Length: 582
Image 1: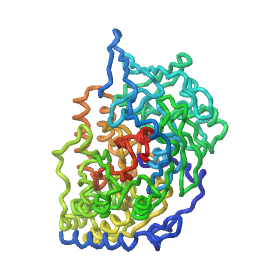
Image 2 (image 1 turned 180 degrees about the vertical axis):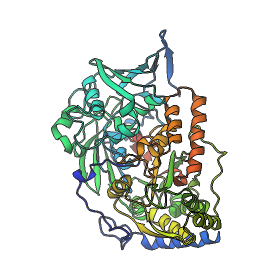
Image 3 (image 1 turned 30 degrees about the vertical axis):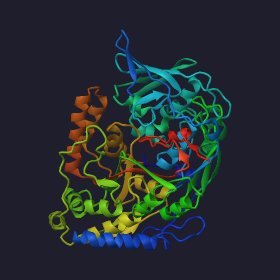
Image 4 (image 1 turned 45 degrees about the vertical axis):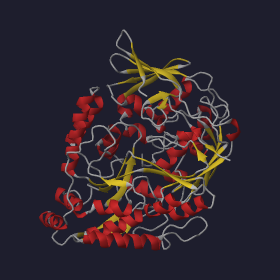
């Protein structure tokens, strides 16, 4: 998940922070005007440039008809003593949300908040990629795999006091699916519904009764039940959505563990505990998400007690964090990919030998060593090694600048060419420092005769422009919405996802890749799907629409007073289990 809805500019009229090609004079300044880390970034990037030049499973009950009905136990969290309830958790993050209507959002910072305001029909178990009930207590799939029936939880209310029922499910999903729905064109494009293929796969969504819903498919879709757990398909309050219209994104109402209180853009979002939450009241009274773009400033705020947790520390601050007796560094393998996409709709990236040359020009091992400080591994495939079907037999493009120059000459560019290199303006789970990485890549490309001008914008503008193909080469990445290879391949590399506004920002359109992906998502045979996704990895390696850069570890730094915080690879719902030690 790292994209953005197409009507961003209808909701926030913020102008780009920087003109094209410009770099902010103070790196990234925080809201108090403090100077960012440009000097640190430049020194770290310069050092790197020098070095580069040198060197539990659900219980399935089989029905007589062949249908499958699934029941799973309720989620269980570690409960603290009663006197430890309450308090406000303040979390520091690298950027603000774009919006809070889950159906329209496409970026991780928005989903991070939505995960805590809304619920989906099914959700992931704590610390697992296995499914558990949420707003549906049970579900079953027909023998022909085309009809999914969901039995809804009764007695649940939205934060505005209105009842949750089948009508709410139909409103939330049909507004995305049905072009004739009164709210289909309200608030923007439903990109996830389109990019997952559900727009083409789903036939209709109907209510059997007040607490039973059926989703009918046109064709079998293997990862459907996991897909419907994606935050974008959360259930919203029909009453609130009708009341606020386009502005529902700023006035979100769901059934989740926390209720929306306040949003000061580019500063903070405040949530309060939902006392009537069906899964049990959260231990915290409030959660405040602070937007602090500078990694070093976030760490200072954590150390002085202004924050309880922070994301995305500078890799070179990790030793300092480990030595601080008040802090704890929580890590786990990440299900992500950071990459450099080459826009194949633009010359010269439509030429295979140019894309191969760029891959041979980048010393990924050195980048990971010095920019990730051991908190990542070089990437060679478009999916992480933690995901099933990963093919470790694929041989990565070796770092070989001389071969890169030869390939450029064979492509008709013996003297290289000029291009723009788009740098991430905010730290992300897969690329912790976009500016330092951009300077390193710029140096690498210069070594083969490619002169790259660094371009950056504010986060929302960056996403808007890249998905509409305004870039030459651009950094971006993806972290998993579900534990299925389809979540990476179809969103990032299918022909369907290359339609603007695109998730496939390389604008890579391969008939061979599309055929493999369509067959893989239709098959229910795990071995067949593994073989197909390994074939897809081979096609990707041959066509190289990206430079796959790195897979980063999932990292969070916390004050040791924060208790029972357990990371989840796909969700932010774990906040409801946290408490603060006195």
